[in-house]
Image (cartoon, rainbow, N blue to C red; front, side, top):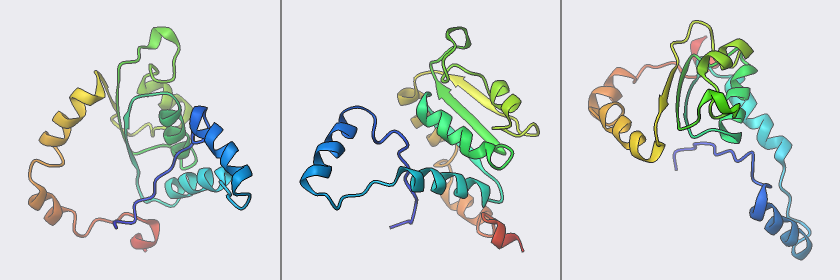
Length: 152
């Protein structure tokens, strides 16, 4: 309905991957193009005038989102919401400063990491930001430039 792309870089991980494998024998014409998926997310980042990432959780999703922004010299805005901590060496626990050092977040950005359970915090964030005054937001963003082609 809203033409919002959905990417699933871990689609073949675990049980879903097993089901795709079995299904490919039952219906040999079924094709899952993971290369097209990664190209799509990276192209979306590269072709965007500006990017922001609101990442709930860590691990693979965080890695792929940040890595897509690496292709365009970093995200302009970044908010992490997860319970990971730096001491354990996990991707989820890595700070925004680590992503800046890799070029996944721009050095001019002002990233935020919220150390909390996303299922509790995210609804509160939405209620106090995006959903606070929807009509005012629509009016203030009606001429927003989202794509490089819009800027020319």
